[in-house]
Image (cartoon, rainbow, N blue to C red; front, side, top):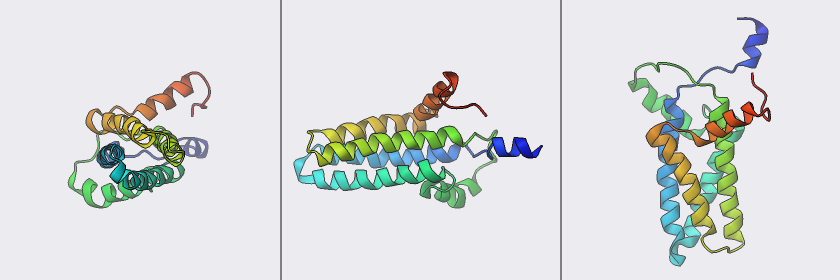
Length: 157
């Protein structure tokens, strides 16, 4: 492999890692939705969404391999699994974390502005995407990444 190729293509990641993180995120987002639907627990929902937003930011900035869920997967889950059949480009899942961050941060803004069901709606939208990844290995953010590559907004490597 030439030095040029090595700089263009980052090391692959085990695709089961982001799915593991998506499963945890799905549960947290579902809890957020239910908390946000009751005025008595709305503040807890807002706080939980703030934590989830921060976790999305970590994934968007540092990638899935440096995300807390990625580290848990690597340390505790991955050793008990067979080797992955193939590795995945880390850029689409990292972009998906950015999309999750944008959606969750929108919920925080809507909550701060006291928009009715703003937190619940944003958490529900993020839940759908996380659940699709966790349950069906369909990464909505990754598909957006590929689509943006096709139309030339993201450079192909």
